[in-house]
Figure 1 (cartoon, rainbow, N blue to C red):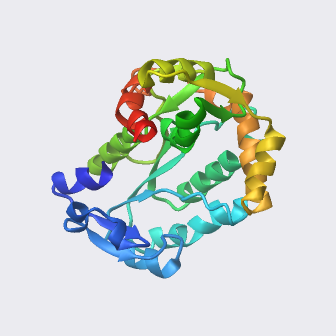
Figure 2: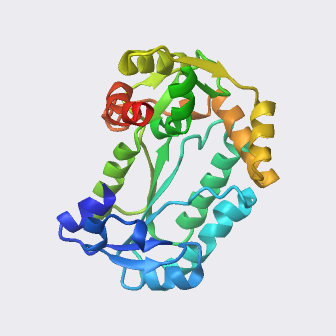
Figure 3: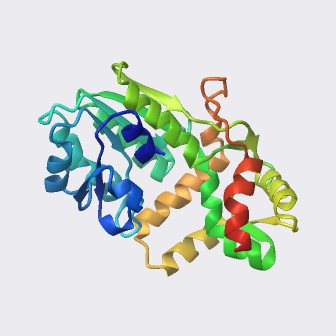
Length: 280
């Protein structure tokens, strides 16, 4: 949605991508492409030259420590913002700032540190504070298809906000195209309602037309599973700490209002995104 919105509004768009061939043809024809990683100083120097605004998203890299994957990855960009005269930055981050869990929430704590780093650069900064994504469930498509089961570590009855990534993109596009805002601030994007894992199972059952149930996994089992894939041990600990903090209310610190709600319901997302993935 971001790649579609800017050209449609008459804005020139420059995209950093490791493999330009992965961009859809229609997108590649309408944007300037910088090849490489946006964690690389030479790449961000090229990408930020003449830029008025930057959209910042840290890709999760389980081969690195939490510090290297988040603040370390962002450091070259933070150094390049002021020299290139970038005025506005919109970043994707997480809920939890100001909660009792914020300082020991693993990857969320690391993400909040990225926000502090960018905010210290003197740019106008808006951080999109997000809960868990509906799209995380796509990783469970094979299990849902094969056995009607999806898993996580949360209490099955704990309600929390969830959001569709398209809604996050829509908010980001609006901020990037407007740029009348100043200073730093947080923009929560909370979805339309709080849902528990058991709620998700019920709605998936209705939308998919097949029984789906939730199985709770222990944090230790999740840790062992992630380590078996060869992920960095500190990064895995960050995932564990994040999951524990979410189950203790990390994402429940912001009250949903008309300004913080976003429109896509889980029913809609299941019908348009999950169902095709499960039934194909």
